[in-house]
Image 1 (tube, helix red, strand yellow):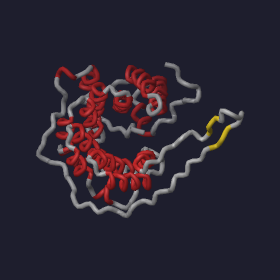
Image 2 (cartoon, rainbow, N blue to C red):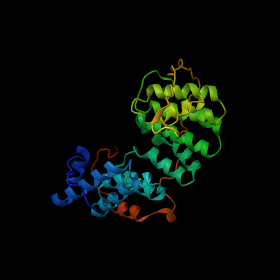
Image 3 (tube, one colour):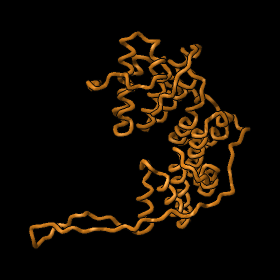
Image 4 (cartoon, rainbow, N blue to C red):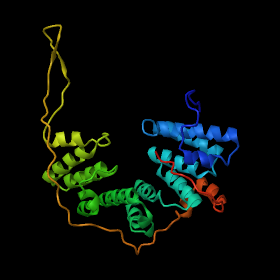
Length: 295
């Protein structure tokens, strides 16, 4: 696949670059450029990112950062079985647990929410950093909703992180998920409060909480320009939306903690293993560490 001239490969994370130093220089540069393209396209063009990830995978399948990037590209393209295989391969190479939440979400994508919940109660969750634990909570709540357990999903999301006044990278998404679950349960008033709280913490517009709140308030947006059939000119129609002040903090008492007595199956059934697992097994004995390849 063609690489734009402005891509040099130097744009990749320094830890990933360190990993690629095990490859011949020319090969390392080619892999790096393809990884840059994966990161550049994964949000706007997941299929394009997937294509570049396959090139990188063909060139350096024994590099953990490549397997991880391939996993995220497949995940973004909703190829959950392939993504899960790549994430498992990367995890075996590094021994880390950072990918545990997204692996559980792949199980959801494959229609196995019970497996995702098993993973949410596994010992690996306690090894995650705070961001990883919040992500795991979001996945577990999603699995509950997949199973039609709306009230359980609401309880799952109730946590100190949700109630906290501080704004963290995960705050907007956590509040949004909680508001959405409340709305699904028919608790519209509470949902409105938490959508407003999500807006308050969503500085980069990562959610559509403002649109959801506007819908609840009955605000309709129309085209600004309306053609006048009688005159050859345009009439401007202005819709004024009153700014909604965020509600006071809502106290939450219930906190759900993962169950430690559930041991998940670390490996997928034999009929779900892909060639990606086979490649990774060959490198299980390899030593070395890598940095996070996630954006």
